[in-house]
Length: 305
Ligand SMILES: Nc1ncnc2c1ncn2[C@@H]1O[C@H](COP(=O)(O)OP(=O)(O)OP(=O)(O)O)[C@@H](O)[C@H]1O
Ligand SMILES: [Mg+2]
Image (tube, rainbow, N blue to C red; front, side):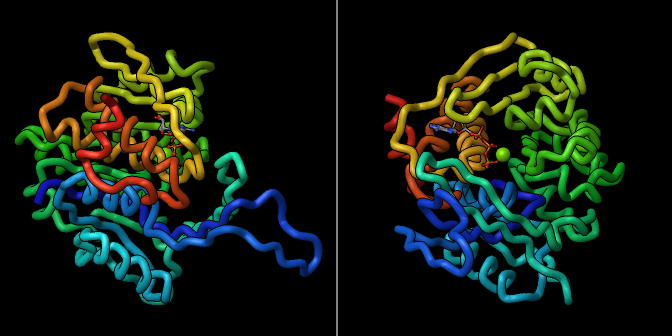
């Protein structure tokens, strides 16, 4: 096993294109509706498998039909979902995303079982065996902000495991709390608004510096179509996005994380790995849903040439 993904698991229900909610009881025909396994752990897990990694995902879902769907789709995509905890009477997290003609993605969201994840839901042996651990959405699975989990992360990192972390929400209080993880992870990958909300800083460069000072080896702030800012002790570097035909940007951040981590696992340096992330994200922007457009590592890397 190569990678363990830990954190947020969501069923995404997407439709495109949507310009507005219809009046009254009107029905508007759309081109496409999809259901996907998404969220900062599940969506990234699917992308990591496509990029050639073996992946086990951990977190909590409900015992409802959405949970059945999530388990079935993760298995179909080749993610080991056998460690997911199913909670009786709880709702599996879900989002409804009416995707705008320009690829923009407003959403309606139920956080459900993600809010209750704790260290007791994780298998420490899986974490100890992993070459890399991706923490997806630690602002939402805030129960993992636990000294015992931090000690486990420190233990595996001392043994050479790479730990990356992504965020999910736009909620200032939860994002500020998630800063407690930073001394215990190698790389943190917030998007622009998350970086600003985590720190209270007025601009991305300052926010990245503030987050780096908390202890990780690198901070990668994704900036949508503007690419990303990569900050390490070696200084800042801007990585431009790849130009692509955008259908839906849902999951671009997850794909960026998956490509970045895959690059690191292939021995690439941080900036080159960020380019792998950029390439994976550009693929995902071409289709509806967080897994669409991305197929395999070779074709993804070809877009960088
Ligand atoms: N319109 C676009 N065209 C090309 N690449 C894009 C576009 N939007 C995003 N990307 C790529 O995806 C990366 C991540 O995008 P973004 O900053 O929107 O992530 P996010 O908000 O975390 O998304 P997610 O919903 O997955 O959490 C960017 O750094 C960029 O490389
Ligand atoms: Mg994101």
